[in-house]
Length: 393
Image (cartoon, rainbow, N blue to C red; front, top):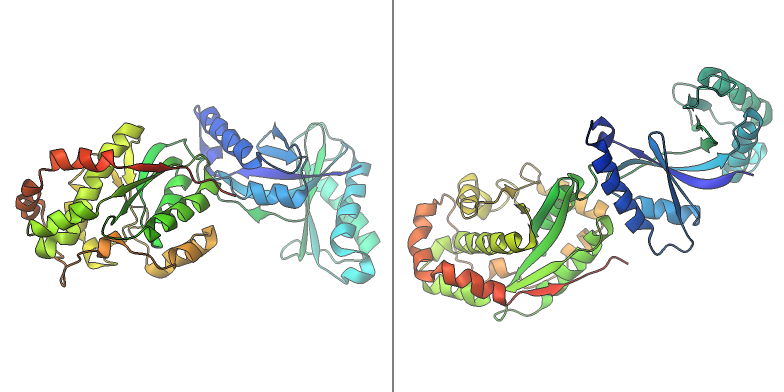
C-alpha cells in the first residue's frame, strides 16, 4: 500500500564539502522546529540526497516544509514497495487520485523521469521509465512528450523503497538558518527591513530584531507593527526575539543640539550605535538594515557611508540594489506586505527637518554628537529596552 510523504531536496547545501554535516544539522533542527505542533506525529528520515517527512496529512506536511529555509524542492510523493510491480501500481494510484479516470482526464501529454539511487534495482533508469510509460499509455491512452509534458511522473528508486511523484514545488532555498552566524536586524514598520531580514535568513543568519520607537513622543502603533512583523518572520526560524527601544527623547535632544538638516542621519547613527551595543550583548556578529541605494534622501551613497562609520560591526544591506517594486513583491511573497502597509507613527519621520542633507560626512556630525555625550546616552537607551517573544501561528 503506497503511503503519502514529502521529499525535501537541498539546493546549494549540496555544494558544501567537509563542513556539510554542520549545515545539514542546522537544516534538520529547522525542519524539526517547523514540524513541531503538527496534527499527528511526523517522521523525518534522511536518505541519500533527500529528506523524507511523513505521518501528518500531506497538505500540512507541504505547508510546514515550505517554511524551512535551505530546502530548494518540496515534492509531494507516495512511498511504495521496492519492486517494479509496486511502482506501476503506485503510478496508477497517483494518477487516479489526481485525475480521476482516463475519461475524466482527457488526453494529456506526459513523460516519465526515473532515477535509480539503488543500482541493484532490477531495471535501469531508462528501462524503468520506458516500462512505466508503456503502462500509462496502455491504461490512460496519453501521448508521450519528453520535451514539454503536461504531466511529469517522477520515479526515484531508493535502497528500501520507491518514491512516485507528480509535482515539484519550489522551496525557500538558501542556506539553513544559523549556519552563517547571528545578526541583529534594525526593524522599522515599512516594507524594506522585514524583507532584508528574510534575505539575511536565507544566507544562513539567525536574526534577532530591534525596533526603535518614538516613545514617549509617539504612541505604541509602531511597536504593534514590529511585533506582528517578527511573528510573521518567525515562521522561517523560530524563537525570535524583538527588542523595543524608546528613542523619542534622544531624537528631541538631537534637534535641540542643532542637528538641523542632519537630523535624520544623526538619528540613524545613534540607532546603529545603540544596535551595536545590543548586538554585542546578544552575541550577534553583524547588523542588518533595509537600505536600498538612492531610494530616499537618507540612503544616498554618502549618507550610507556616514551611517556605516558609526559602528565597527559589519552593516549588511541585503536590498542595496533592489528597487521598491521588487521589495514590495518579495514582501507579498513572504507574507509581510499586509502588515507593512498598516499606518503607524514612524520614529524616523518624528522631528524630520524640511530638507534632509544628502551628502554628509562623519565630520559634520561630530559637533552635534559631542553635545549628546553618546557614551552615556547609549547605555541609558539600552536600560529601557523591552523584550518581546512573538511566536508564529
